Amino acid sequence: MIRTATTTLLLLCLPLVATSAEPAAPVKLAVGQAAPEFKIKDAAGKTIDLADLTAKGPVLVRLTCGCKGCDKELAYFQQIHEAYKSQGLVSLYVFKEPDAKVAAYAAEKKLDMLYAVDTKGESWSTFKTKTMPSNFLIAKGGKIVSIANGCDPSGLLANVVSEKTGKLLGTEAVDVKSKVAGQK
Image (cartoon, rainbow, N blue to C red; front, side):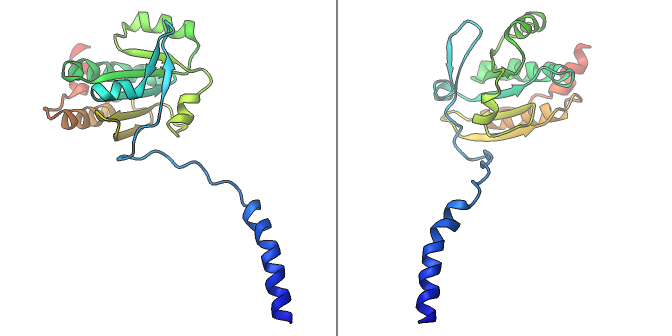
């Protein structure tokens, strides 16, 4: 009798335990996973669709804030873009700064890659990261092949991204750190 009462009590309480658990933290994206569905409008209002881009070739998505560190890194990532765009790489920058500030910045830095503004930070949620900057190298077809997080104004992180891009494209990696140093 006691066992039956205990079993009944457990069965009645089980739904309470199952529903009172805290929701699981979002799982971070990982190398080997499919890139998330992602659409964003550029400064002209044109929709950029990551699936359309990765259907044509590899894409480097850079989520950035435009701070001094990210600004110092920009030259390295511009070199990555220049080095591999003829082999199909598309670079997409997503800035968290206001539109007018980014427009002036893009003109000053002569950005020739795709860029968009996301002041609300929804892109960071889509890519399941809070880190700025975060770089996602995505292969043709949409599989993530590299994730590089954090700010590195020295160019070492950009060189790692360049090496992975070269490997992905089956070409010799470009030492972007040396290229930028040679331009100074």
